Image (tube, rainbow, N blue to C red; front, side, top):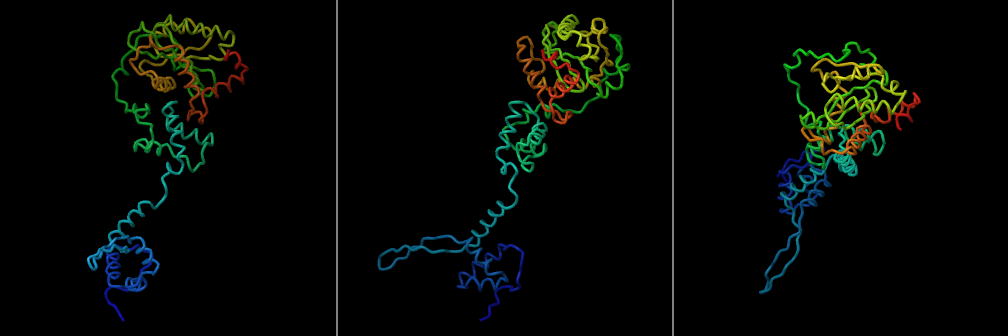
Length: 364
């Protein structure tokens, strides 16, 4: 018996369409066998077997005979059910998301970003450096940002201060204002090896303020340019006397080794540094940046962003303890840096001090 209902051209490598599923349902209802349906549709018999299995459901039917109702079970193929299950299976196909392949990575990364305030970039680099996970299980920095945006991670964008604070610079008329104060040698006199960070022992000094009240405590910051090692000291006010007193105490503790560790200091023209050259110019080189040129102390500016993760702007520092300041200092020096090949500032500082036989002196 020959049937001419459908096209019998055999097709390979294509999925069944919904129209073909309707044809299967129709032929099943007409009593066609699976093999006969395969011939009519030009499909492999196994394809038809799989489809019927996929789209078949169990139904309970009732039949009344001689005033009695009988129930019996039957298996029926529905083209709509086959199409629905086909789509469900397709959604589950393909590569498994990376965050599902290694579910332990996300809580580990969340802890570093939320508790230790690390950036996604630092987290990725640390994972590779410590070989905590297989290389193929470690996402890229961009992927972590995407997971954060998609709320796959507990970390939120607000936890990533660097991402929220980035903005385009705008022209500022203050840059061109004349500045009459000359506190000491200009940065133009500073040797090129300092600017290029080729040698150790050259520092930048600055202050981090809370409120605009100069009589309130401020944080004095010293950062070594090559290693990014940071020293933080709470001082009683934003004054030249307070700065000089703290520096003198630091240098006295180092004794004759101080000039070997502090070979130069670069400062801005703030009033709190007015006595810097007069008080310490005899023991170390002092240089001053151009007015309104914070980019000439780029290391300090970048370091301050880390401090602001703990102490926001306009926060009164009167209630900040010295122990918190030292905790922030430790955090900064133990933070893996891209510029240091993801080593820490503490590691780099120790390396140079040991080369100079000054490690024990500085530690004490």
